[in-house]
Amino acid sequence: MPISKSRKARNSRIFFAIFGSCFLLPGLGIFTFKALPELKRWLSGAQLYSAEKESLMAALIIGIVFSLVGGGLVYLGLKKPTDDPALLDSGTPWMARKAWASPVIKDSFALSGGFIWAFTIIWNLMSTPALLAIPKELAKGNQLIWFAALFPIVGLFFIGLSIRKTLEWRRFGQMRITLDPHPGAIGGQVGGTIYLKTPLPPGTDMDVSLDCVHHYQRSKSPSQSIVWQHRTTIEPMHSSRSTMAPFVFDVPAGLPHSQFPDTDYYNWTLHVSARLPGADLSRQIEVPVFATGATTSSAHSPKIAPCSSFDKPQRQCRAAMHNPVEIVGEHRGQGRWVGLTVGLFFTLFSAGMAYFIGYLEEQTAFLGFCLGFGAIGVLILVISLLAASRKYKLKLANPILALEQHTLFGAKSLTTPFNDIVAFDTKSRGSVQMGGRHYQFFDLMMKLKNGEETRLGEKLSRQQAEGFIRELNEIVGLSPGQ
Image 1: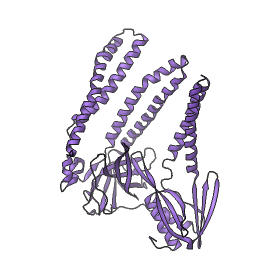
Image 2: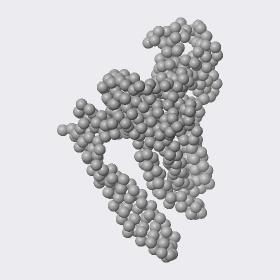
Image 3: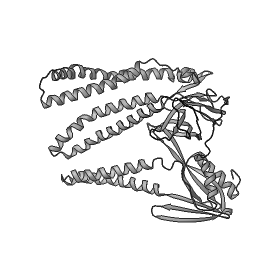
Image 4: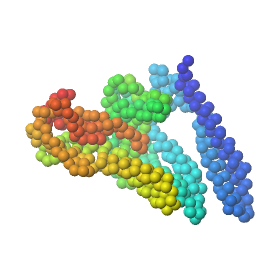
């Protein structure tokens, strides 16, 4: 007999409470019966030996970390649920979630920021003993202790991330949206108005994206894939004290509706971002979307930014009729610096460990390990450099299409008569999640009569690729869908 969603949710809460108590009770015991007495004795003026101080530090850290982690899990387990999965089978399934019961939906940025700060504090507390042990171990000649320095370095990264989130919260506060229609409609529209309590600088454009994402398990590991995605750039309406930005998306029929988190489910997320001096705006809100077919009744229509990235295909194709124009994918920068940073880190870290430990300490086996590890870093670095250096330049001179493909090792040219072109199409390059945002990549492809395909651009968004296809079809003289 299948287990209901309500029963699954209750079992999860029971598990969290029991599992959390396995951390909370030992943590409180260590803090109360070990750390506090030693701390009181030390504060009262008693002299502690070095070993006693280290024991006190370890007891404080373990007691606090175990108590925080365990207490959080117990709270999640004992917290009274506000959602009712049983309502998903009713005529108003969006009422299953308390946050969806009203057209006004608020982001959870403050909650996510709190989790980041909690994780940062716990990570740095656990890294403190390693940081304190580095000078003593180096004095003993233990070069392997440099591995322990990674934990405080990563802790500094988390501190910087937490501070950045705090500055963003202070600048923009909580974002809310008012859905119209409520809920968003498959086979209709997802629209409404975005509200910020802070006025954005005049002339600031806002990027808004609506994503339908499939979450599932693959080989017992969580995986995600984008089912549908659409983006637009709008001009917000500013006042002296706030910002308001209407938006609307036409959603085709046949897409999956919003579901509760499970091992296999779909959700719809609205992403809002804007580049500004200082802290950038970057928020996301999960919205209810169901197959109601409703459309917006709002009196305010979104004002599309006149020079957004979605106008570039037309301007670039027109410019390519006179001079070679580089086809730059809108998502070209996504992931580039990650590969370069990871490859450089692997390479430099492996080289340092190979010298200080493998060479100076004459650890031959460890030296071989570092060289192999460094080879992986060099490979990642080379692949990232090749991807970053790849460029596509296009020139349209009727009746010839000229393409220049530039790489790190040079360039090659290709000329094709318009009459040999069968169609322009897209090829999915997959998707990636970065910073809570999903990016779907497409290649712009040219199909020829002899069956060959040639790439004209890479890492384009869906709208950008569709814009290029529309403009290229018009210039070359192909019918849409040909």
